[in-house]
Amino acid sequence: MLDTLKNLFSKKKESEFYSEFPNGGFLNNVNTTNKSALTLSAFYNGIEILCNDYAKLPKTVFKKEKGDRIKQDAHPITYLIAKRPNELMTAFMFDKMMLQYAILKGNAYALIGRNKYGKPVALHLIEQDKTPVQVKKYKNKLWYIIEDEIYDSNDVLHVPGFSFNGYYGIGVVSFAAQSLGVNLSSQEYASDYYSSKGESVIVLTSPKDMDPDAKKKLSRAVTAKLSGKGLIKTMILDESTSFNQLKLTPQESQFLQTHTNGVLEVARWLNLPPHKLKSMEHATFSNIEHQEIAHVSDSILPWALKFKNEYEVKIFSKKEVTEGYFIKFNTESLIRADMVTMGDYLTKLVSMGILTRNDARVLLDFNKIEGLESPLTPVNTQMIEQINLKIQEIKQSLENVK
Image: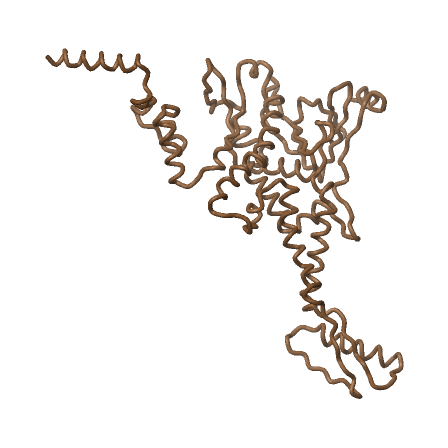
């Protein structure tokens, strides 16, 4: 079967081949790759924030039963996605690495290990730096070549990043190479600028002609003296030779501000609010909470939905899907506000009967208390039937007392 598929894939008219898009670019001889881009503090911090925020989302299996959603803590898939996907890493590290590959490489892959009954028992991360993955489309179905083995798409978790076709992604650095290259050039320039203390050219003038050998000796002597370590440097120049420095003007030195402006560029490429990259110039205490909500809805939620859809299609059997099993990524855990706001939020939900008091305790990670399972209903929002029923109960109670 393997040989047959390989022969089919060789027919270009019937199959399409996809491999890693060049994750890098060049700008003024600056090589912009995934690894060089990560030397930019803003880019590194942005990748860490996105991956960590996604990885710490609580993930649980639920089942729909008669309109209710029942949490399935004992389901084996819950253990895989929330605790231990494989023997090498925890769920947090697995999720973090998957999203990291999806952003930087453009695609995240994991092999689904199954038992003899076809049930998923492990999710094995594919380290693309060590194990390149080839994707082939044949007759409207994807196939994966991993270490010379061909896998059906149902046995491979595949989450693409930005894509032109919907099933194969391209890494962000491939498009951001020029923009990040400017920041890398700025970073290199800043390093050279500070190491030379802003001194770029030194001019030595002499009242009389000097032979070429003497000029070279004098140049080497002055360069060696000024490039040495230490704050105080004393030089003695022969025959009234004068010393002049050509420094950068303050206007030229402002080029270093490019490094600061690069933070906003990184925020745009990674779809992050600037304050997440420690840029607080336009942030206020009144809008930080709204920016956090925007971060979850615009930056984290799209990735969570990509992974959720892939998990539900590949990990659950068709029978489980028809029975109502699904995976929930709890993004609300990322937008817990201050205690006053949270208290006001829960009070409104409980008083309106949307949550029970035990539901509120669960959201706060408290244990349930017996007797707090019934929802509350404010008197001014009760229906006339409820009021009449309550009147009848009071009358009956009074008659029983008599």
